[in-house]
Image 1 (spheres, rainbow, N blue to C red):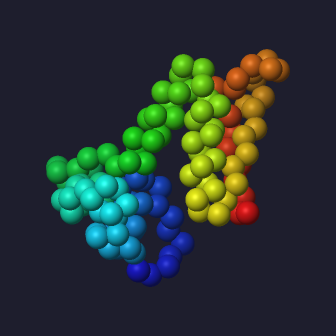
Image 2 (tube, one colour):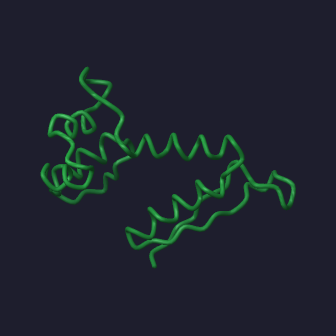
Length: 115
């Protein structure tokens, strides 16, 4: 796959690029031996295709949002830290600036850097 300045901004773009880069068998093994059809569903543009499904990144995003909604942004942050560390990065969270001191901020800003 060619390197470009384009960075995937959608979950389906990420999975399309990962599938091209790593191949279906590697992704199938990573995600519990899901079918090749399922991998293609995750990697299709939902605006152009009908047989698509949200991929695991969107599911994680939804999970993090649910945790924040019940006041557990600390768990969402822990999950993001685990994901960042796996790719050699470090996550740190900065309060939004609008929340009272000592209160869990529902919208922290994420900063990350390479380890």
